Length: 313
Image 1 (tube, rainbow, N blue to C red):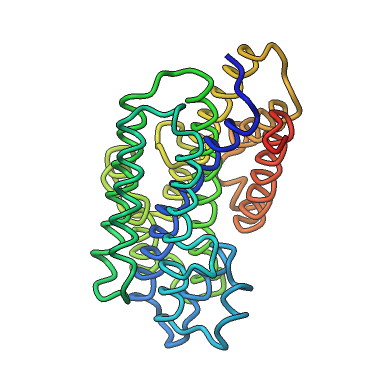
Image 2: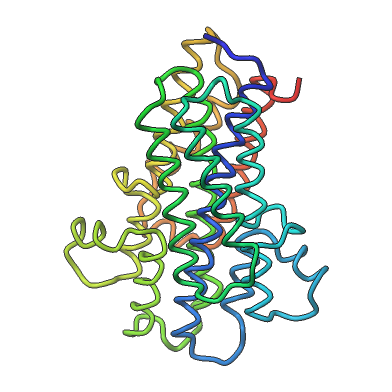
């Protein structure tokens, strides 16, 4: 059954911000792991986290230099940053309360309880960053597990699913971009054991270390890891998997509403680009450029979905 635009909007953004809260934690995890192996004393890896999260300009408006402690605080608990973990979980909870009757009791309670617990944990300065990042990931995983375990697969589910996977596609592209920023092609460590360890850190930051070993049964190789996170259709945080889920939900919505929109064609075109290119073609054409283009097109798709389903009417 078709939903009111404002209800669809609330569901879509509730899930986007739940995913964003987790993704901020994962970007910080990637930055932390890479900082432990960076060859220089410069804070490049922390600047790259800000750039990849899309919050560098906001940070620089508040702080004059790239200080790791300030960056961590800005991305975790600063309410001046609309994408911080604390801001994101708060916006997710506000949207969830607005569409409360569209959610199962279990989903709402998991979201509300997680908001209260994260608000309490983030009310004080960070002491044990790895433990806090694990806590954020555990709470968002609980919300997601409750949602997928109790929600009927109807149009409510589809708008939520779109929010989840559009945000996830954006994040996977951004986490790979962290790697690009930290270890540029002219760096002497390309292909070294250090380089491979840093790529392994990227896998750990998206909880894909063991699944990578199952799929490739090999040491960390940059090309295989890029292939895994971009093109592998069975890896739940890959771009190809995310766009398969996006297109599935858009197809269900097209049937429910009896009409297709521009967003359907855009999503299929992005999925086709991921289908038609090999990892070597992507690398040869420029990994950074590919990721940058995808982030822009993913954002355009989000805007098209909002227009197509009257989110702001």
